[in-house]
Figure 1 (cartoon, rainbow, N blue to C red):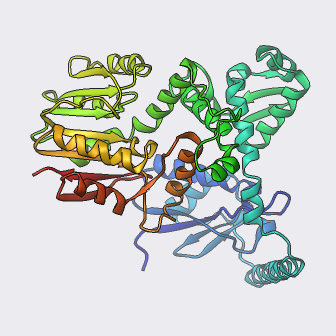
Figure 2: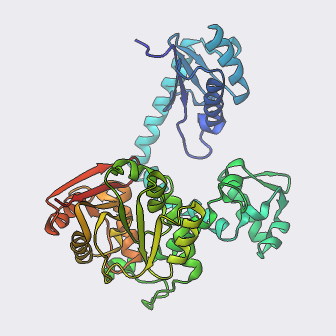
Amino acid sequence: MEPFRFHLFVCTQQKPEGVPCCPASGSFAVLGALDREIQARGLDNHVQLTTCGCMGLCDEGPVMVAYPAGVWYRRVQATDVSEIVGTHLGDGKPVERLVWSDAPAMKAMAVEHRDKFRAAMAARDKAGTLPDRLDQMIRGYMPSRCLLTALELDIFTAVGDGANAEQIGTRINANARAAGMLLNALVALGLLSKSGDRYQNTPESARFFVQGSKDNQRDGLLHTTNIWHSWSTLTDAVRRGTRVPADGTGARHDNAAWTRNFIAGMQRNAKDRAPLVVKALGTADVHRVLDLGGGSGAYSIAFAKSYPDVRCEILDIPEVVPLTGEYVRQAGVSAQVKLRPGDMLQDDFGSGYDIIMLNAICHMFSEQQNRDIFRRAHQALAPNGRLVVQDFILNSDKTAPQQAALFSLNMLVNTEAGASYSEVEYATWMKAAGFPEVSRINLPGPSSLMVGLLP
């Protein structure tokens, strides 16, 4: 049974550099071209496009198989895609010059590949060689650091419409030789292209990393460069049980630039999730919302835009509130969103709120601090009010999801007593604070909602 008229499989099995594989021959470009061509011809509902693992024909890649006829294509390039879609999917006639129909030869190659792979794996295992998965995990910091440094130096903006290493080095006030080494690494990572001695941005880097681009995310990503330095202290933080700033003094070095980058980073994460949160909670009978630690105000802005009668109040520290005001004004909801500088760990919340939100906040605090916030939120809610926590939520033994477990370490190196917490913990704290009805709402992505309902 075939639910689609055609089902295309394209090999995208990555292998170590220098080893023949379909991606090294251009299979991802083929995949992208197929997707675009299928959409352009209005065939979305008739063709299922699927990636797959190694088919054992690596020297003949990129390899693609088209069902239901079971036609095998080899050495397919992006420039062949229009012909394949038009002739094969449109007219039902395979593109013969790309078809591989020598079944015995195909089987022999696949069997030889399988046997070589098994022999190589057995030899590596006997020799005690570190598995590729572990080696890649250990070296994973290299491409990360390369891109973060490029963002710190604003290299992609300096590249502009194209320049050589000496020109770029001058623009970023860096050594030309060293800049060239970094630029070459960025080319190797697919973030720049190079022709002769001239470097250019890729469409992707030009879109997301160049100042002035509509979708530029550099400012928000600079917060990650700050986090990098904190993570370098993980060993000492595990020994001590709390964060250890990189200079070892225990003092914080937050400043205006750090705060602005942090809020920009939070905005980057929140702007797409905020409408999902509002939709999940609904706006029926919601008139007043208290947004604790609202940061960029993304969630209050989403409430205000979805419901003109709602009034939101954002409580955040004095250093953040002016930045919040910028986002609120840009969104055009200043009449609905009030800003209040203060400290959620100490200040009175007020009363009569229908929803009190803690979006990506609880992980910053200890269990006792969160229990106290929940207790005071209970006192500040109107009848039938809701306490809403959005955060990474761990399973009961705190080993999954992976991102939540890793983020707990991020809190170890960046806060005094923060962590990721489990659904059981949140439910326990909410019930102890006076919320007899607690539920979880799963959202797309890494975080979920825990909701405590006040009778």
